[in-house]
Length: 188
Image (cartoon, rainbow, N blue to C red; front, side, top):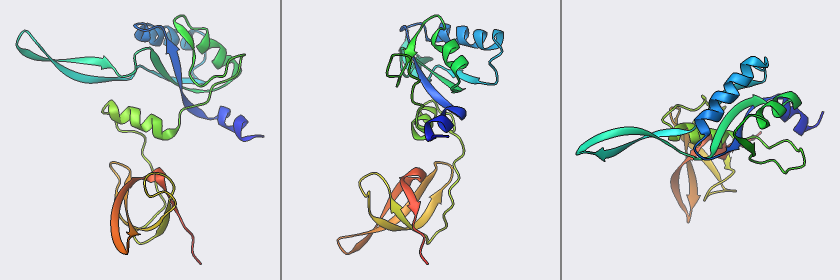
């Protein structure tokens, strides 16, 4: 079984393109179709990313919900042929983002992208576990210090961040990174 086949057997988040202004209607339509067609085993959550904003109206501060990505809806699903067909043929859905046309299935969102969207909505993203301890040597995989090695100094589990000490210009410098930006270097 290929990596692509395994990826489609897992639950992932996908982005749907919709007619602008129809995001909530697509969410309702898809939820209804999911139940009526017995797809609860393949389609799990349908989300219109929003965040609370405050505006002044008539001299008062009023909170409203504003769509973070107008024209887009997120769906958590296992990409099966049947689920893909049901989602893409839901009224108001114009297609999947990341699909290359001609009936090809789309690419799922990266976990970091999903976490960032949830953080923007004020929701805690999934709990991220990391198999590191203070004092472990790690390689930095991305960001300004990519390719450098450093030593783990501290963790912020709430924000899924790790503080790593790297040597720059003969001095130790601390940098705060996301968990996914580092990997442990195994030394014998």
